[in-house]
Structure formats: C-alpha cells, structure tokens
Image (cartoon, rainbow, N blue to C red; front, side, top):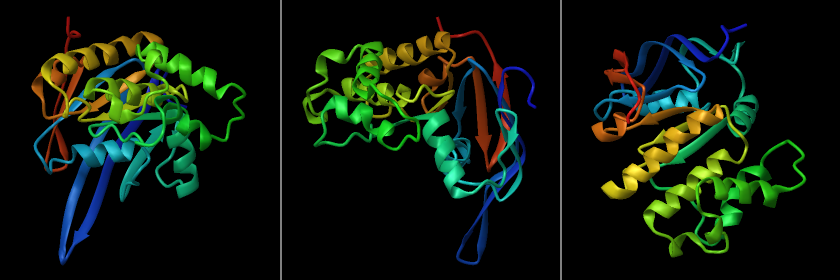
Length: 234
C-alpha cells in the first residue's frame, strides 16, 4: 500500500533508447513522488527527459528499469492492455495541439473517451455536457472545433480530459498555441481543478505557466536536478 494521498512513486526509473549504435538515456535514475491535489510543473530544455517522464506517468511508455507504483500498486512491468485500461480510466490528457477531431461536434469530441471505456455509463451525453459546463463551453456543444478560438478549443480539450473523472491530469505544453490572455484563463481553470481532488502535472518551457504550480521539477539529461515547492500563484 502507498502512503495516504500518494498517487505515484517512481524509484530509479530509467528509459533507454537505441539510436543507431548509440544508447540514449531519456530517463536516468528518476525518483519522484506525486501526491493528491498537487499541481506540479515539469520544466527543462528540449531533450531533458520531461516528455518521456510525462509519457511514463501516462502509461504511454514503459520504463526500461526501476520501480513504478501507482495508487499503491506496482505497475513497473504491466502489459499493454492494462496500461491502456489505466490510461483510459485514471488519467486525463491535454495537449498543445488540442487533438480534437475536426468533423465531430464539441459534444462528440468530449464524449469520445467514453467510447473506449469499459465502464457501463448510461448517460454519456449528460456527463459530457456537465464537463463542458465545468469549463464554460456548454453553449458551444453543437459547434465543430474549426468554429472555435484556440482558447475555446483548449477548454473543450480540458472538458474531454475530465470526462472519465481521472485521478491525474497530464498536460503537455497546454498553452503553447495560445496568446497571453488565453494562457492565463486556461491556467486559472487548471488551478481551480485542484479543489475537485484532481492532481495536475504540466510539462512546459514557459516560466509564466510554471509559476502557477505549487511545485516545480527541473530536468536535465534525463535526471531531476531540482525539485522546489512554493506557494500557489495568486
């Protein structure tokens, strides 16, 4: 069992790739614990390992070595189908490019994760509308993504990430395609999710975005070189 409130515990996590004849250590001995209702930012230059860490936390990739405990369970070497189940049921994702399907309505985009869920959910439409209301986008439910602004698309993407009521939301450069006004709105929205028991991990190169987080993790050459906790952005 994990300590109360601990979502993830990574111990000496390593991820090695072979590029030609060279071994690339994308993660090189990472130790990290993530707790309930924590808002952390993962920062670092390109190639520092922050995206690989995000993929590992999101069960999109498996570590080459090390121990990975999620909600008290050792998940270091689980198979592809179990990773997919955890990814669909316990983790929400938000991406820089929004990843919305252009031919589907806003409502259908938000409902999409429920199609792949093993849970029998009777009122999928109702749940999707509630998620859209949470981000202030229910009035746009019949529109398609190309009828929305960048900030509106990201709000829809956040609604989609909430649809399966995840324990953790992972956001990869979520404000990278937004202007400063919309960036602030999206980060304020993220921060408000903490009060609903959701934990947030944001990968970013933007110091203004990282400033919203309670905790900042800096990566370099596949290692965590700094881990700082401070007051939340006001």
